Image (cartoon, rainbow, N blue to C red):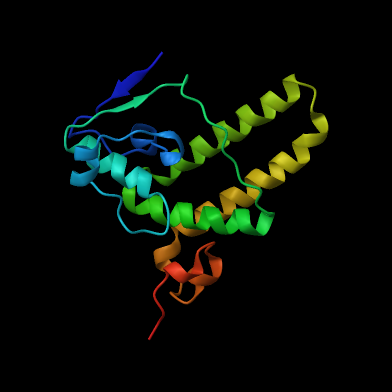
Length: 166
């Protein structure tokens, strides 16, 4: 069953409210023309969703519209991808650290429960390592503006995105 959410102007911009993935989406041409995807290292789909919602648009989620999508990142690539994610989302969302941590821990707990319920005990250590690497990259990305500018391209999965320091 599909459902839509339109936040009010008073609502904070939380990732839970603006979640949108361009992996499997359809956007009306007129809406996309008013809110083209911004140039950023990552999360341009979330930035689009925020702009569209703030201008009175709606995002409809339909779980029946599934798609297979995935990546085969090494742990090093995973860290770098999540650095980019943390860096970009900190500029789009207003989630305080405690909410980010709570969301992450809830996700890890649910994932561990899923594996345990299905008897996949041997996957648990790797799943915890994987989520720890993701979390470390994301946390460092959220702190990205405080890091030396020369570090950002070295921590990023997309080093060419970052302007060269003069």
